[in-house]
Length: 502
Length: 82
Image (cartoon, rainbow over all chains, first blue to last red; front, side, top):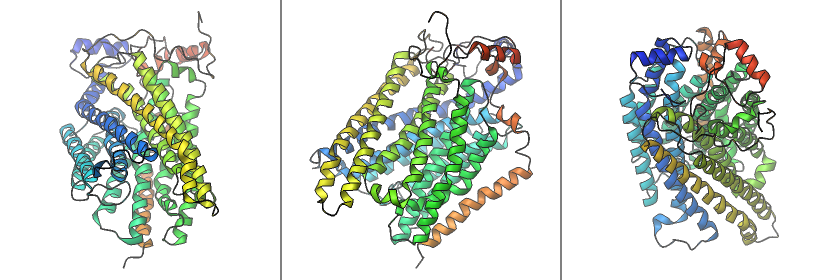
């Protein structure tokens, strides 16, 4: 039996006994683990495949939207390819198509392992995944055709998209809650709270925002209640839950402080929902709502610092592991981005900062630190760990992993630095009454070129990863991989172990 | 006419109070007892016995003393190509 690539089942009793004895497990424990892994295999592979498809198309749409900011006459004659639709379609593809599907897949794989039970209703979850994908597809077609609800982050038409997302997501959630009810584990690990919380929060958020046709300034308030909370209560919660699994698992040591992890979860759960109104600083809603939201945003230091300390202190002294594990490399960087984007978000909520950054490219850079640097990096890390265990062999190419990581990191770094600078320059120009509006556009232009360069690099990274995923799926079970870890030659700054022969 | 603040106040109250109630329920059900065991539930004995090439000799020895002889990791153990 090969590999960290543990097969998904179908072993004979003799093989199970042999493997169990080699791993210090009882045969029953190993069999339960294999069954747990096998129960989610198909739906996870389906969701990962769909997610990668959306990532590729969404990246191309993102690049096109970016090009249009410095080449405004590019592809303007056909309405579906105008900036407003292309940019919105990009957001839907990467948020609901890629990140959501990838993190649901990750959660479906993790959950049976965490609760020591098989995934209940795996076929329902599979159906849910298909319906969710259809909903995303219809929403995007609607956006490109000009049929949308006009609310940011949920432009998908309520009659076209919402039924599929609600039913599809509901079936997946049902499967997870049935699995939780059938759990055999005595203890609930913190990731279980994060995953279950996500599947309670998201339907509540989506339904309250979509069902009632809010209008006027109420619409803006509910819009940002949804749009901000979908980050914290959906993408963030699933990603942090995954990080809390993979970092200790790879390092072979428990997280630094389990108490802090619980503090992080419950303070996020109770206080995060107050944050959304800071997107409306200066907007037509009562001032006290915005002030409350700003105060709550500063409160977010508590869960963020608790989670940040925990993730980083767990890795402290083990940075050498980043040479051996792409999972750890992506997830640890994702954890750093989580700390950075959260603290940046809290500070951006302050009126003194917001008056410069509001309505500028800064916000786009900020959302990419979160959506890409954090969420997408954690999703990549999770896939590097999970896919070999689904298909029964390791990733075929260390070189492709290197290219993927380096292109993605370079891309997001260039993107964020260029666009953050452009946002501040643009904001300061907009605040100066002596300067014409055009000056703010010209001043931000170098940053917009940088955005395109970064975006193209990220897109290349995604094509590399998708190609690697494709050959991974096609390779025969048990296929041999390379002989050295992908980042073996990279010596981390904080790596202090003397290796023989180095 | 619904005041713009009312829906958000209600939604926020629900989103803040519901976790508080669940936290109280979970505490009463004993979900926060033995936190040390909870923190270790994802780690199998084999996870603790794996030889990790990035660990220092002292760290390896500590692991060996606590968990017995170290075992070789399998190919792709850490989520990537070997």
